[in-house]
Length: 108
Length: 115
Picture 1 (cartoon, rainbow over the protein chains, first blue to last red):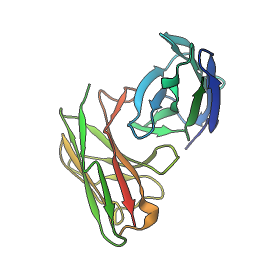
Picture 2: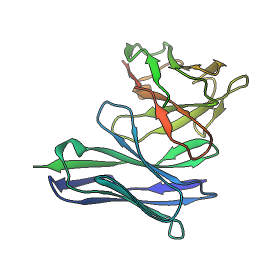
Picture 3: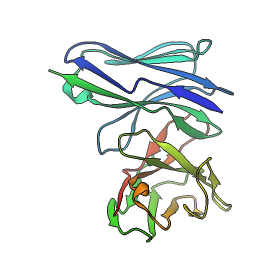
Picture 4: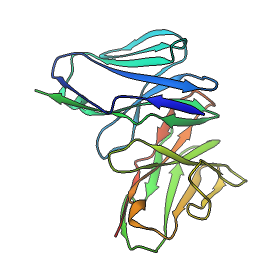
């Protein structure tokens, strides 16, 4: 089985940096995904980490430590449109199992 | 990337009735999945829709309540049977391209309200 844990909600200020953590325990590991979901919309892919380290994509970066069962999503230069739910997910046997999601609110 | 459509986009149903949700993909895919997202919560996998065989259900979900069809590699249906207000959720289908660890694409979802 697997267990994936994220904070339920976070608040940050426009222009700031925020780090959303995800810890996991799983039998077998095939990488970790981050998805963004705006209210009322389908989740959209942000990143996929399979090796340790930091992967940067513009304002968003994702980090993975397999030995610690830990990942984070780093959002820089926050914008109001970044207010959304952020889901970390782990593929298991071809299916994707999600954590409970972190609701991020960006304030002016 | 795969383009996925779902019908209906939303519906309001009476308790005790059933609703069938359709998921259409614009390309052939091996793996199709059905998720439920209850209000304010994350996505929970209901089942994996297998082409040519019965769906594989996750713990807590059963075929009698959520029968699934997968007649070909581009289409699947999920039926929510004998609905109750607790079934009010968003139901999303998703597909995976290329095998384990490759990005999953999600349909726009079906917002179901049961009165």
